[in-house]
Length: 174
Image 1 (tube, rainbow, N blue to C red):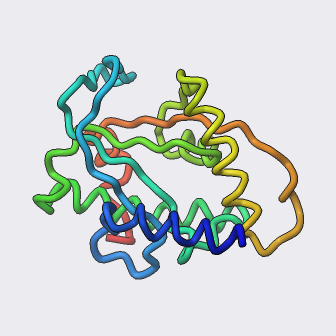
Image 2: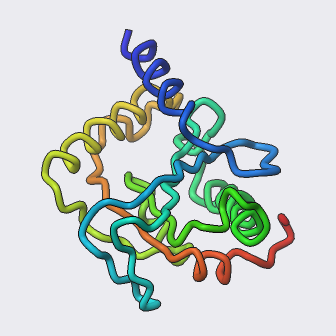
């Protein structure tokens, strides 16, 4: 019953998300939207403010083996997908206006290694929702029993589009 509910929620949300162009694995979606919130200053001095276009990264739980993979596999998967997203950010009209990318969830240690800035989630309601949601996803979509009951605290990861392109723009995966 929980898996059925999660599948329905994922499919409903994915209607508003875009797959990374030319991805063979289709492991990540990007939700492109207008930022609404307090200004955020990133380490490279990029300021994200109300009205800016941002891209929220989401794992495709139906295609990805991210929850079962070892860290090396996940890191390589991110390399390939991020190289394609960097290329799309330079060349694809859909992605060219994005000022920054961000993600919310429990994969922030890997995002940090990819140049993202990790931040605490400020709103308690969102923090609680994501903690429950991320751990439900882990429980429902992970085939491995190891670590399924270990609850992790979700965080927010941000990177400017310019820095993202710089970090991921020249790769064997493009």
